[in-house]
Image 1 (cartoon, rainbow, N blue to C red):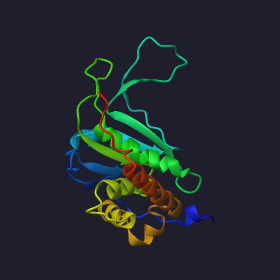
Image 2: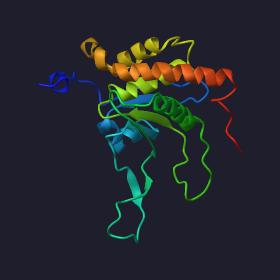
Image 3: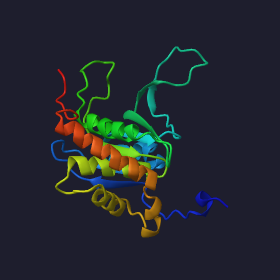
Length: 211
């Protein structure tokens, strides 16, 4: 029997509020699994307007208004229920550390992005953000912890402090902590955090939105 088959997953909420009113953005940050990202009633009830899926082995059809008069061989595509962003992390070894760094910048850029007032951009309303993976217990935990450590160092001076906070808010059982998040993800998050700090010290990484 493999380790994955032996692992017991404790029950947890579909979605968890991790941080309220992010300073400078006044946006709430949530973590959840695939069921949270696929539940439009749940997202609407929490005013979640953007979803970041960080699992390479999970795709969710969030199309609300599919493009019409297209070939039958094409899958549905068009504007969605929410703004949908994708980062392809593996839940374990195999991720380049730069991918975790990219995930941090993607999450931060979702908060800073200013969408044009054009019909082709129908989802312009600001709202809260959900970061999800398949189970909402490893990849999303690692990425959100990295983000909190880098953006709120006065609250989370170390990556481990941020991970402890996310584990508590997500309701992850101590028996799961050895893999929530996976050690390989913690390692690349530490590396990504160090690189992000170097970029910031050099004047890069948190530039204003270009007009």
